[in-house]
Structures are given as C-alpha cells and as structure tokens.
Length: 486
Image (cartoon, rainbow, N blue to C red; front, top):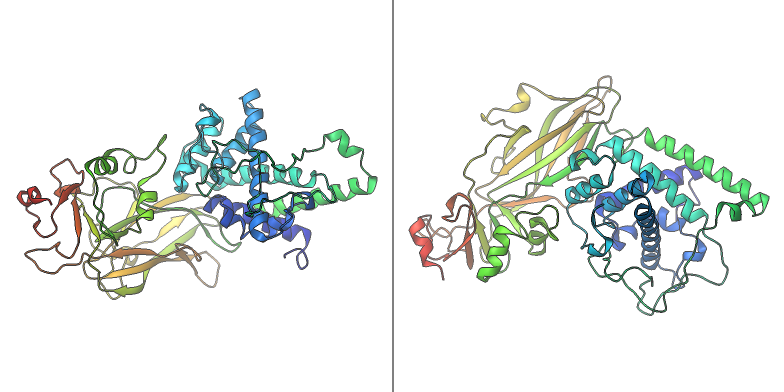
C-alpha cells in the first residue's frame, strides 16, 4: 500500500497521523479500515486467513485491545503506574476504555460519540487528573501519542513470526478474540467471543529478543532509530493539521442545550420517553450517562431549526503570533424548509454571560458577515490574535428564518512574513457540513400546522423549559393552546 514509495521515516510519520485520526474519529473498524499504513504494519502472524482490509482492521483493533488489557492489568497491580495510566488515557480517547480509574472494567459502557466526553474520561486517568479542555491541548496530546506509538511499535515488532499459523477468522469475517463479553466494540456492538478464539500471541521477553540472530537485532535497532527520527519530526508539527497550518483546530462542538430542531418522521413519544429526554438520558449527559443528546439527535436524523451555536477551540500552531482577520460562512444546497415530521420548538429565552468571543451570522443574507453582539461587523475593526500555543474558543451563532441550508465556516489566517494568507475550513474537509433549517409555516394563524407532531419547550414551556406535547393544528404561541394537545 504505502511501503513501496515512502521511506521508513515517512511511513512512521504517516502511521502517527493515522493514529491521530483514530483518536479524532474513534477507533471503529470502519475508521481503522481507512488507515492503510497501520494495516500494512500488522505482522504476518496477525494477518487473518481471509486477508481483506475489513478483516485486517478487526485484527488491528484486537491488537489495540491487547495493549489496553495489559495496561489495565498493570494499573490494577500498581495504580500509581504512570505508563499504564497514560495508555488507558489514550484508550479513552480511542473509545476503547469506557470506565474510569475508580470503576471496575466490568462496568464498561458503550463508547461515547462525543469527543468531549472521551477527553474528559481520558483526563481522569492522568495523574494528577486534568479537565477535558486540557487533555485536547497539543502538549498533552503529543506526549500521550508519542508514548503510545512506542508501545504499539513494541507490540508489533515483537510479535513472533509463525509461518502457517495466521490469525483465523470465523465464517462471518469477524476476527475472533477472547475479550470480556461485557466489553463493547467501538461500533457499539458487544465484543465477539467464542471458545475457538485465535491462539494468544505473547510478546517475547527481553531475554528472548536478545537470543535472536544478530542480524535481526541490528535490523531492529535501525528500525527503532528510524522510528525515533520520525517521531521527533512529527512532534515539531501540529498534531491535527498539515505542517503549514498556522492554527490547530482542537475541538468543534455544537452546544448541547435546549433549542428547536426538526425530525424527518413523525415521533409520538410516550410520557415516560418524553420525561427521559427532558431530565435524564439525553439532555444532562456527563459521567455515568450512556448516551448524550447529540447521539440521540443524530440517530433521529435531526436538523437544528432557526438557530444553532457551534463552539470552536483553536490554538496557535506557528512559531509566530498569527491573526485571524476574517470568518465567513459558505452556504450550500439551500432550499425552502420542509414540513412534515416532528418539530421540537424551544425558543431561547436569553443569552446569559459567555466568556468566549461570540459571532452572529444570518444565513438569510446574500453574504453573511461575522457580527458582534452589538450587530457590528467584528472584523472591520479588529482581529483575533493567537500566540504560539495560545488557545481561544469562538462561539459561532447562526440563524435563519427563510431557508434550509448546509454551511461551513472559513477562517482567514495571516502569519507575519508570509506572502499569502491561509484559509481553514470548519468542519474540516471530509467531515459533513453543518445544517440549519427555518421553520416551515403554512399560515400565521396556525404557524406549526406544517408538522405532524409538535413538542414545545425552552422559553415557551410552562414546565421550566422541559418539552411538553402540543397539537400542531391548535398551538399558536399562546400558552393556553398547549392544553389542546392530542
């Protein structure tokens, strides 16, 4: 795949980038399958008999689990073992560790889709613990990734090469393993377990390695030197961006709070289900909750309505102070808002205090401009500066009253001494664009009759912001009409 055209150092650098991709997107089989350099690295003794990218991905996933299991065993024997804790922190970022340092592994849950949840769990494994907004900083991420890369290198390079005994697959193509049946795969499916699992491959002891042929020892030493060179090169670069990127996009998260959104299908919720959405499983999130509101919202194919808030955390990745001189919105595939389905209507009752730099964008304008809270063009009077390593969170508030649009943000970044500004896109290339829709209205007298089901919350709710069911043919923003629910 990659080995024929790249040097050893280049290949190792590519592997590091792919490891980072697994952290950013979660180590699901489908994501591992796109990491060709990591799959090429899989030792022959671990390659499944049915050698396909999908089966290699499962084999590589099992290798990652072995590393996590060893780290967990080391932690249980010595909780102060910083190397074990760091490995478990990376496991949390990968979505493979879903239990905390004070929880037994048997209480593991499904991996979180939210990167922030995984970052918070990873931070709890460090000693001393750190917060989610700290674990994503480049210095922590680089250190943890570097340590994990060496650990992975040790596992792969020390795997015995056993001709004629490849890792076996069952008839369904899933690689067999002996993991705890209570554990979960990254795709949210219980781990596969069978009595005829593949033979366990143990790492040789240091003495066993020294007993090998001198030529093999020299080759291994050369490989380690190349790996170190690649890592030193990689650590001089931003951890998530291309080498020339002057800013690092550390986190992009839509605010998980009450707001209006539309589902494409009619959703008739029982009182218990509505109570669950309002007060427990989805809205509150946090430690101990299996799913977040975002995961439920995504499964329902929901679209934010009227307005949406996206928080973006950036940090300076150049060796100079850089300036963000413009933020634009690129609208795509705009159309009239569709009715039908279900509307969760929750008008915002107030903005409150926010320490982040806030920008307002109106998608109904031909060219939306980043405005401040006073309605003035923010970048006509100032810029955002980022010193090397300095972080800043931007709150990007987008609204529409007329259309349904997909959109991305484009940042213009200027580096002193450079002849040309750099443009960064959020979400980054390869990720789906954001989407926001206006409400579909058939008449002023029955403003919500375009929808087949309606739930009213936020500032319009009589139940302290919680959603209550309403009749879309009767409700007209008058609280008295809420009693006419179907």
